[in-house]
Image (cartoon, rainbow, N blue to C red; front, side):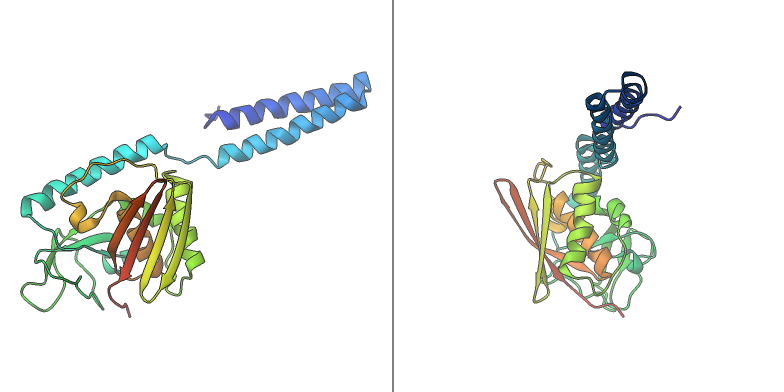
Length: 251
């Protein structure tokens, strides 16, 4: 027997059975129009319940938070040991021949590296430019796993980006209630309503940004198929605003 995924699905099946039974008995045996209508109403309610069951996130928010935290702590240990604080560049899967990742330069500079016409090898330490100091760590981030659910669209509009981020943060891992995206002059502003992820400050956030910023940056980089950097983050009661910046062009 197929396992029932959640209580909404179970309730929907029970209401369907009860509604059909009540309608059949009321119409054929009791010949009662009100009771027959009640049975049909119950069937309609069962459809709503089944729809709610399908809309439930596949991963509970608590489990998502645990997985994100453990992943961030592992990356943070490496970055802190090396003393890196340079801003990371989030690159799409087309630039890594695998999954979306983040490149943390080994040498600090005021601006993120301009990555163009390059495929980064599948290694921890990679060379991303012609100069000797153009070295960096290519790491997996909290957004590397979830960004695989979206597809690239180089001419993506604000609506396309908003849909992609909503799919991940709201529909899949259920860590927010709503997303709003705006674009202007090379900057992408993502406003998250009611973010549900608590985290303690760690060294790696100087480079990668918070887990929310990491997820959003990975998704946007993957959709636009372009490298992205986290420009800044702003937090207030019930809201988080993440500003991203395009750092290069792809062919």
